[in-house]
Image (cartoon, rainbow, N blue to C red; front, side):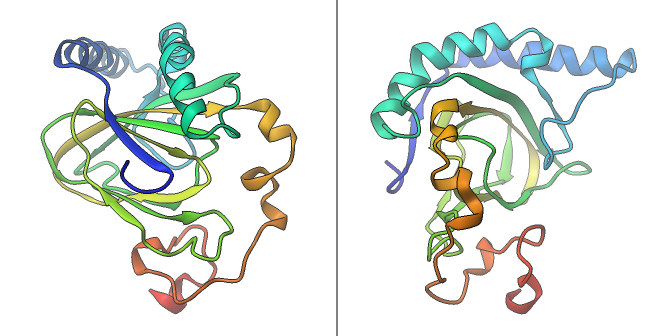
Length: 219
């Protein structure tokens, strides 16, 4: 337990990491050599690949249903009462590409994020409060990635990837979707009606230049 609502655990061993990274790097090599268009992982990251679209959806689905869902259901019984689908992708950070990622929430009910490698410095993950809560822009945790270790949290928790200083970091991220939970119109999926008055001046690290209209006021 890193903090309330944010958990980390070892998940992939060195053998699996080597095999998985070789598969992903082979795709990168082929796509660059053959000029195959690669769709962005999401609306925020520019570099990586959607693993669901390169033949890995069945493997990720099996992993989700066998391991992620039972664990998530124990930790987040409402948001993870069932997992119906997932959006799974690789993100990549290094000089000349994405260095970090602005503060945001995920299009996810429960987010799984595991570091695949490689050698890097910096590239920590900063966590703030829950979307719409009085402390949603208050810094709560700075998490240091470890290769093979995953972090699990609700998609509605504000977080951001701090800039990488050297090397390259790659992560596999699984956005788990619970359609029944979303259909209830509660919490993060009824976002227009759940805002509490902020409890104080925002933490600088929790400000978002993309999403916060008062960014310049506090930054």
